[in-house]
Figure 1 (cartoon, rainbow, N blue to C red):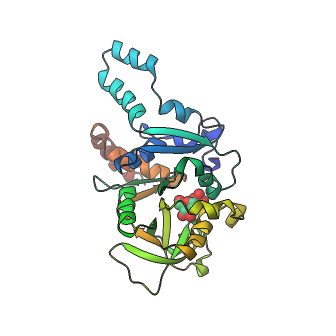
Figure 2 (cartoon, helix red, strand yellow):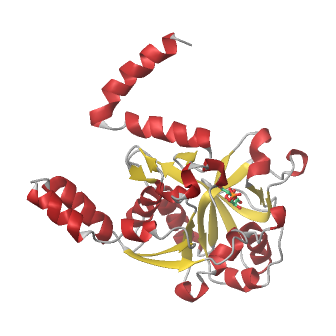
Figure 3 (spheres, rainbow, N blue to C red):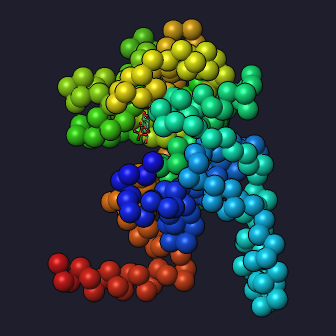
Amino acid sequence: MGTRFLPATKAIPKEMLPIVDVPTIQYIVEEAVESGIEEILIITNSNKHCMENHFDRSYELESRLTESNKQEECDMICNIANMANIYYVRQKEPKGLGHAILCAKSFIGEEPFAVLLGDDVVENNNGKPALKQLIDAYNEVQASVVGVQTVSDEDVNKYGIVEPSKSSSPVGKRVKLSSMVEKPAREEAPSNLAVLGRYVLTPEIFDFLENQTPGAGGEIQLTDSIKSLMISQSVYAYDFEGIRYDVGDKFGFIKATVEYAMEREELKDKLKAYLRELVKTF
Ligand code: G1P
């Protein structure tokens, strides 16, 4: 519901807040597309219809841009609408991530699928996108893979934390799991490996999501169903490369904004000079 970003999110969904000039949802969709995904389902709610406009053609804007010889801008706007086949389904009540994923059941059918959370933007500077790294790992093991990175002891209570299996050793950046827990207290966390918003899951997850009772925070948790899936199927964690920004958090959003702006040719020199001056005042 974007409560951490009120009042900005009173009328605008948090997924449409721009990092520099691109809405966060577009970064997520681009990562999926760059990872080879062609069909995308966005789980929305009744306040999020402007996302549909963003990924649609806008003939009026396109013709105005063409008339004023702004062909580059026009092409950019068109490309957003042609990136992938994007579908939408509404989650009718905010019952948690597990419940949101369950809304995709009939869209997914019997195939493995990827999940990308809108709050987690991952940048891997021209390297393999985080999701592609997970898809490659999936192709090696033919089993569900969750994307993890190490977090500090103070932060384990914000995430799904995985428990690597003691009976199998890691293969490169991939490790088999024996359990998983959503937002554990520091003293109960089985490791410091946190799930950071990227998953490749087998469709059997829906069998568990359908019967999942509320867990941490009174919500239907994806983590709890993945833990149940481990009883019948192997599940792996993959320690992906890339910098992940929690753009659902104000400070994470500001960091992403500054760092993405630093990557822009038209902004980076001005921004660097400005920041140099600014730090002198601290
Ligand atoms: C969700 C998941 C959690 C995961 C996190 C990553 O939590 O439930 O397991 O670690 O995203 O951002 P949320 O941040 O929605 O509470």
